[in-house]
Length: 117
Length: 116
Image 1 (cartoon, each protein chain N blue to C red):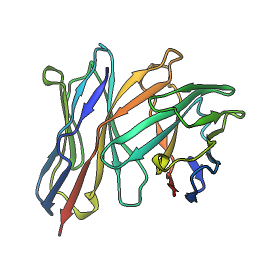
Image 2 (cartoon, rainbow over the protein chains, first blue to last red):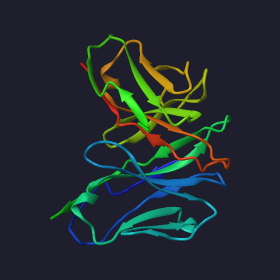
Image 3 (cartoon, chains in turn yellow, orange):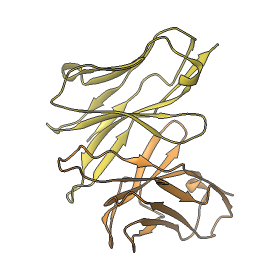
Image 4 (tube, rainbow over the protein chains, first blue to last red):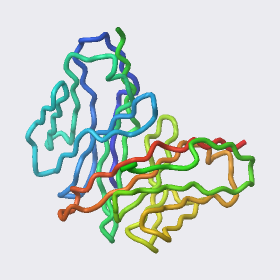
C-alpha cells in the first residue's frame, strides 16, 4: 500500500534561516508522482511542485528547492532564507491510480512550519 | 475563472441531521474529488468521480454519498451526520493533459463542518 510519512510534526525557525521538510514515501508502483502542497493559515491548499519517478533531478524555484532521492524514497523540500510568509502547513503527497485513471492522492500528515520574525 | 468553489464555508449540524456540500469548478475538468482533513492525519480521499454520472469510493467512504449529475458539480451528502464527521472537507478537480500522472489537482477553499 502507498504511504507518505512526514516525521516532523512542527518546525519553528527564525526568519532568514534555511529549513528542510522531510518526506519519505512507500509504493510498489514503478511509475508514480510526488507532490508538495502548502496550506497557509487561510486554509486553502496551494500546489507547489510535481515530480515524476523517472526524474531525479533536483529542482529550484526561487527560495524553494526539492531533493528527490529514489534510493532512499525521499522527496525533501528546502526553503532558503525563510520568511514569515512561509509559515504554513506543508503536505507531501503521492499518487496512486484508480482503474478508470483518476489520480488518487495519498497525503502525509503534514508539517507545521512557523517562521518567527 | 473562479476555479474550485465550495458551499457552504462553515456549517454546524446536530447528530442525525443531513446536509449536502456543493463543489463547483469552471475549468472543464473531468475528474473531481472529495477529501476530509482531520488534525494530524493529512487529507484522506472520501469519493471521487471520473466524469459526469460516475462516482467511486475512496479511502474513507462510509457515511457519505456523492453525485455528479453535471460535469462542473460534485455533491457530497451526509444522510445522518455523526460527531466523527466533524472535519474540514476539501473538493478538488483535475484534468489529464494527455500523460497519466501529469494532471494536477486544484483544491477548493474548504468547508468546515461541526457535528454536535
